[in-house]
Image 1: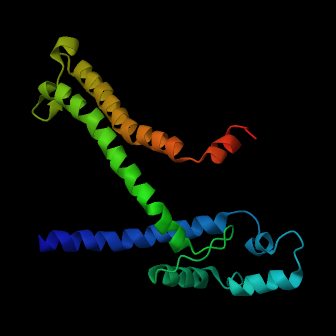
Image 2 (image 1 turned 180 degrees about the vertical axis):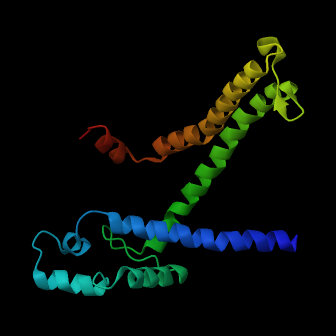
Image 3 (image 1 turned 90 degrees about the horizontal axis):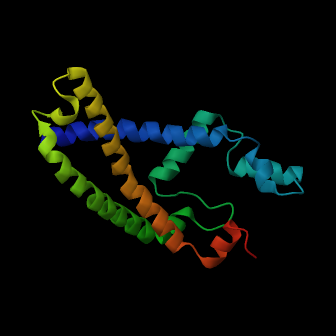
Length: 185
């Protein structure tokens, strides 16, 4: 058990580091100068230079990544440019809805997947799906039927979380958000 845990941990750390590099790199791929965007419409050169210094935009990218990762590890997610609120606070506010979404997604996936699994169970033999009534003894036909059923199974596995997300998304959206989204007043 300990070796399994250590192996999983040994894989987890490089994976998290790689994902953090990808997230940081995607931020850097965004078009435009972030200091100009933050400076507003007037774009006073002194303000732009202050923002570049404050957010370390003039530093080399590896230094920016190290500073960003250090702050992330210490729990400092920064401040939202739009709302001027700490991002950690904003995440904490959204956590209950996220947990609700995850639970309902699992419930819908269970309600959809369990009956499909019960239906498909009689057709499994020796770790291979066999449908002799449809394919007969032809190996290629059996493989084709297996591929179609496997694809259908994968699609239905996605249906639960997607459906739950859509339902909760619309149910949780405020009235004015829906009006703005669909061209209301």
